Image (cartoon, rainbow, N blue to C red):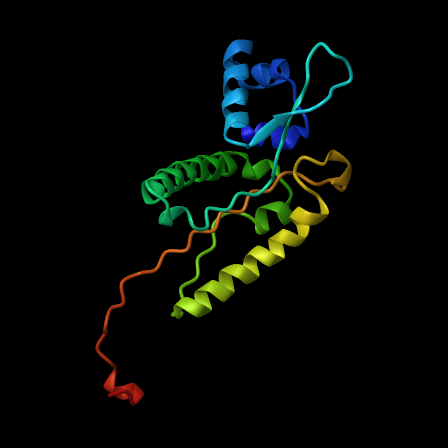
Length: 178
C-alpha cells in the first residue's frame, strides 16, 4: 500500500481500496497503521469529504536498527519480506519483458558481479551506488507527479550485498603463485 501511495502522489482511501481490490474499511485500517508508524500522513484534499494520504518520506534507512532491542530480528524479517517481494517483481517482469522496448529489456533484469573487498571498500561502493540513485530521488521524488519526465515509469532498484565465506583455494603453480 505504501508503494501505491507513493506512485499516486496522493491517494484517497476509496482509490486505494479500489486499486487493491479490498474493502474501504480494510484500506483505511492499513493506511492508519502506516500513519501510526510514520510512513504516510493525511493531507488537505480538494474538498472536505475525504482527505488523501501521501508519503512522509520516499526512502527508508535501517541504519542502527540492529543496535536496538529486537532490531536484528526486525531487520531479518524485513529483508525476508523484501527479498520475496523482489522475486515476485522479477518474475512479473519476466512475463512482461517481451512487450517492452529493447532499451528497457537491455538495461533491466538481473546482473551479478563478484569481487574481493574490504569492509571499507564495500562501504564506499554501496555509498557510491546510493549517491547515483539519490540524484534521481532528489530531482523527482516518487510522490511528486510534476517532476516525472514524459516516458518515465517507476523503476525499482534492489541491491543484494552478500559477503561470502572466504575460501583458500590452491594456487596454480603454472601461474607463478606459491
